[in-house]
Length: 253
Length: 214
Image (cartoon, rainbow over all chains, first blue to last red; front, side, top):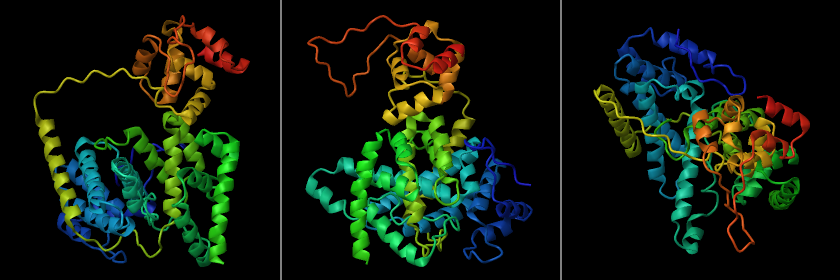
């Protein structure tokens, strides 16, 4: 049986759990030979019975290193998947995009190494929901990257040239956690993407109120409390944002 | 993750927790995290917005685990991995242990923006005025009970020792974003006792009773 995770959920105060399918996959994998597992780590076809989920690869890596064995085969499989993922989720028009992808991947591998050698529990999130955890790392580092670029922008003209469209929006095209979000229907999905692309071009303060009040369904009072402003400010921002959104809707008709 | 110095470890941890739900970020989890880390209220709310947009704008055609590649970025990351493993093992094998660095004295309240102050006040059942007194060291630390100190440290998610070091330092006035009309610098008054500070902060009877009972 796989060793339990130790990270504790701040809301429920219970230890995070792996998904049942992952737990079973790990139990079977640890009983197999190193050679066979190395071959399985190279399997890329998600429909193959030999395919190992990323959560399982993280577990096998931690287990190997902590037992004094090299975990390279699992680490390399994870890195190659993550690199492919970043190519699909971070817009190529992002300034210094290759450096950004390299930084994210290195951040991931260094964390993997530190966790395995030092015996921490930072990688528990990756054993629990790998794609969600990796998207968190990506969004955080993307925002940092954009912040640095904005700081180093020297002239307004340069900023105008580079900060265009939605390429600075957090996460760009976004990286889904497989099977975790199902849009209501295809028509809504098409319209939703148009709206989201437009939202990303809006000022940050308007993005916040739209997402919290219109997408998450928060009350204006609650959004005001979270953002540290009064309700009237939320109302005004929402009104401005709604007017802009209405124009997108008109264009779509 | 210890290697990332851009985002504080606790905040990064909170980001991961927020992302561990199916679909959109869970508002109740966001509330729980803000109560736990009131100093990061703004960052957490902002991240929840990013996460929402990210998940809603996912493209069904972009499979989360696409066909792997192995480019320059991956090679660099693998090299970083091996360097880290090597250095950590070398350090662990070293006979000598470096003495721990002295903890820097810092004001834990300076990180709080307006939303953070509000969240901190909510977490301890007080108000912004009382938080300001703690921030500006208006309260005589010798009159603060150990119970309140621990309660406050837990609410702010910081070490009680660091908090005590802050509270027992000389009084200051936070001038960030403030303007004084007087010709002379503001003069600091006497420190208040903990009880006086509680009584004179506009707290309700119930709030006063609770804070004084700790």
